[in-house]
Length: 318
Image: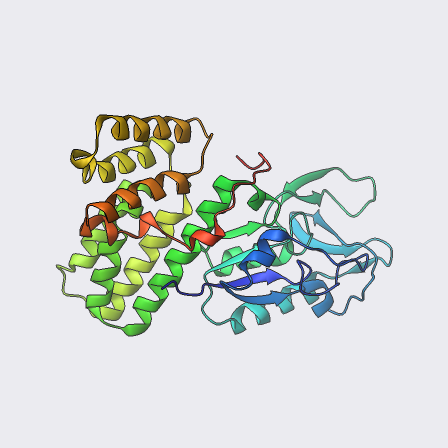
């Protein structure tokens, strides 16, 4: 049974026609997620009083300070957006990530134009939207992606693995029982090993709790380390080594042809011709066949609902 991650999402991504031009957007991945996550839709621009439709706004850096500016009206909206961002983020329940509108001057996590000054002809660099930047500062380590990057299947898989892992940890933390943290770490061993071996070992030491810290302190330390572990993209060699480690638990029972097929599939994954989910399904099938309890307990074999596996890929974001 999978937990329901809680995600903050840009309201314009299928929830309300609140884009600056009054248009409604539809994103297939966001629509697909609706039954599997708890969404908290937000539109910072509407919340600070801008209408629909409205004149576009832009980010501008003036004397090293970031401002939000509406050229058509010459309104400086910096303070209003800063106040809203603080109030909104402080009022959130525990969340597992952010799925925001790409290139939005308020919501874009990255690839947002930041102009060098208020002049219309000013040069622009790339950065984060105002609200997204505040969210990143307020919730360091939480997954934050835009719908554009998530059209890439590798980034989409990694985003889902991260938010579902954090949702599972949130459940364990809510219990306040040390045995639930031990169980979490035990079932996430291969996943953490694939993601970051150094952080995996650190999580293991925290769970062992040789210092006899209070349970709340152990959970806090583990959460910090877990977010750091999942924040970096897993390197292909590390993931492949972990897959081979998992395969070692079942390979003795396979025929020569079956072993060869798995190794061929591994090379296809290495060359980015098939997604990680395809290999995980193979290994899980072997684990079911041989009733391999250790593997069947490992979250990495099915880290999120398989119905969310989608093979379409824009090719962008790699």
